[in-house]
Image (cartoon, rainbow, N blue to C red; front, side, top):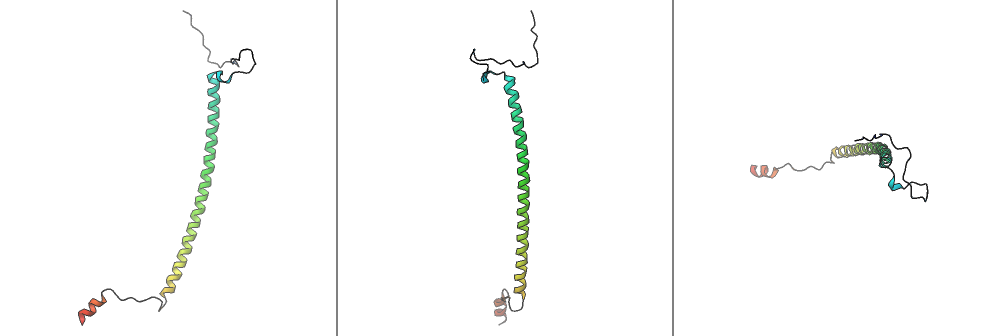
Amino acid sequence: MEMAVVSMEKPSGHFPLRRGKSETPVPGSWPRWWRTEASYQELKSQLIQLGLDHAKALKAAEADAAAKMDEALEDASNATVVLRAELEELAKPGKVPRRKPRGWRSIRSATS
C-alpha cells in the first residue's frame, strides 16, 4: 500500500478554466482556500474599520454629552440665581403674605 505525499503548500496559481473559451478562471470553482483567505482578510479589514468608526463615534458622543452636561449645569446655576433673587424679593417686609397659624380658631374658641 503506497502512501500519497500531501503538500501543505498552497497550489501555485492553478485554477480550473472554462472549457477552451477563455483563460479566465471560473469564480465559483476557485479553490476553497482562496475564497476563505480573501474573505478572512476582507472581514478583518471591515472589523478594523468598524472598530475605528466606533471609537470616533464614541469620542463624538462623549464630547456631545459633555457639552450637554455643561449646558445643563449652566441652566441650573442660572435658575438658582433667579430663585434666590425671587426669594430675597419676597423676604422684604410687607411682601410675604401672612397666613394665620394652624389651629388658631380652635385656640381662640377655647379661650372664649
